Image (tube, rainbow, N blue to C red; front, side, top):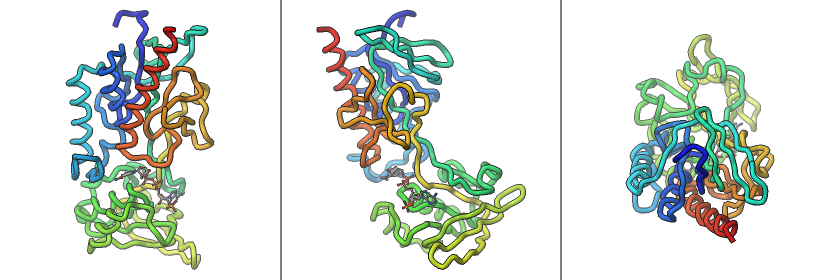
Length: 313
Ligand code: NAP
């Protein structure tokens, strides 16, 4: 691209939604590029141990699946720019043109697909920040190996918490799964795998109130929600998996969001901003999965194409 040239479409983020969009954008013949701060594509999938529900590719590791997605986009000739997006500004009147400010340069485009995904939510208890990286982790596949034959705790009851507990059970001596209710939110298939393991014990109706330790994690203080009873579990690692928060802060003034920061957009992925589309985990929707993120990528390109055609008339 020449400087001052205007893209048809810039896709921000290279997780499944961004890569799905990249494939559809190339095939639509759009002058498009994917912008991501990391040269390694995949987003949250990269830190998933095993993905068992992506159609046609059962049992793949998150790393391998991400690589396949990226290879597919590369093979079709998708363009990638490694840069950290700092903000997006509208310049231009009737025919909106956006300037995407990055730490490298400014890029100009007629349409944008926001596909920045989500990050882990903090638990927000004493000891969490202080011991982060010293026993407190948000990624079992990244840090699990440090806890070989040790006792660890996983906090949460969703797909990620249960996947993490299953993964860690294969490495650690014992895994405590601490969940605030008496029922897990995770998929049944994951629960079946979990309950078949001999070295995982669930602490039901329980919340972690404090992570203990002076230099590294030594334990967690847990409170039973029903009885009010408090106890201490001796663990050397705490894996926090209590949900996600969308990475949408820099788009606050650009598009309408709900109170949690998810971008308001229906299945067309069209947002309140003209020519701005939202795809993947950042979009307000009922089901956040790899397959729904990829589908969003395709829908967002379809909508961007329709928008671009309407602008030419
Ligand atoms: P999630 O489904 O939102 O689950 C978060 C869990 O953390 C819930 O069990 C919740 O408890 C608990 N929690 C939230 N705040 C808490 C707090 N302050 N203290 C204690 N516990 C707290 O999040 P996720 O597991 O990270 O998954 C994120 C998204 O990715 C989901 O949509 C999930 O379906 C999807 N995903 C899918 C797969 C798959 O299909 N294989 C794999 C990974 C992720 P409650 O249950 O009481 O609310």
